[in-house]
View (cartoon, rainbow over the protein chains, first blue to last red):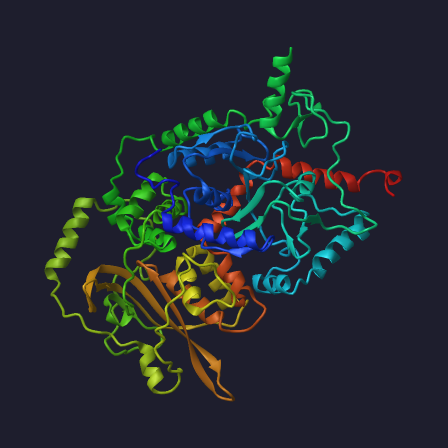
Length: 282
Length: 354
């Protein structure tokens, strides 16, 4: 830790202000709470919303895990850990069961999280209605009136055109039958795990200056029609080339010489844990 | 195997930072921070204005660290700002109290208080000088200038708009002493307060608001102003005296460019003049004019980008735009995999479809 900086970089007043916004977000699940997003030494759009949540919540006894697209070792995850280490002494881990606070970009760890753990999402575009309405003033009104016709129409049009809903990541969900929420660009595979979870999910959008939350045991439903049910990504028949896992979310790898396609767990912490366990069994 | 270029992230980052130092290490010539501050003043001014932090020496230091990149230097100063606690808020300062070093009007030849051409590149021929004067020679010329110059008392320069207000061509408003919105601590709400609008514009990327203002005066908008007045000079800042609120202490002065633009406006079967206002840290004339154009443009209704408050105010912040553009370089393996899945599913043979 660099003693020139306050613990967790931001001044205590700013941290308190962010925590108050978090409390409001927890009280109104799925509602986007505006907050005075601070500038950080890391680029806006590179996880500054998540980092501000982490900085305002982290204490000396916390154990931190940071993943980027599932990977602990990705340059961005490493860089964020490096920054948090610059201004705190918290321990870090790659094991999602050991962590008390996990910051993630675009994935939920494969192993189920507990009620003593926090998962902080980095959010690029918090507004689920932005795809149909560019104006913030207008989307705020639509949320207030629970006017979600536009987003349903978008789903319907997609079915008419392609026979299925073609939204990839950022698949919208309804939280506690009230707010339509953008779960951040997690794959659809991760969406069902937002529902009735044990842990608290927090979402931070630094550039767009919004915080929102899904508290434990909250009803979270991915938007779908009765006759065209919600569908996750196609994963059948794939196996992790390293640990042999099936039915997890995979990265697709293309061999640079032969062009052969193989798959690998996108959750690197989970994958290496499985491999270690396998080695121990041998 | 090597596809997963991101494994070994830690070492990769360290090597990358070493290479950055290499980039700055290709000559033994030292680049003094003072030289950047004093010789690249317009660059320093631009960085200060976009970061919203008046600190010429720090701006110079940031520029040195960032190989002269404006957005990187702005980034460094903004992040530094986040660690500073705010001890005081200054009292409102007025451009009419300015110690002007330049003042021009494109509206009237003769204005009360007079025009001062001051230092400007406007009337130079942009021919590259292959033999530029040395630092020693430039300093000698400056000394000469200073020796010849006679001190003049600082006079309060009334605004050109006051004259038109007196004639009733410009609406006079009550002084609004409402506490301004602080856009660094609050999220912009729409419709935005004028204080929030002006703060956002003055901190905006100069290129962005220049382009938008240009679109407005060129054809995608309704505003083609006359620069009523552009003034550039030093304004003293005061904070309330801690032990006696009725008194204040001057804590220094800042260099500012201020612009008022006049635009004809409908006034119930007659015409009147509307005013667009721009004020920017440092010598930053085009940005101040652009700001005045956009301030006026946002008062008008219409379909063009420069008339859309959310469009103008939400896309010009250097950190936000450059941060989000640059994030596209981050790995998107998971998200792209999901997008691929969606694309592939729509291309499956019909028998798989229900």
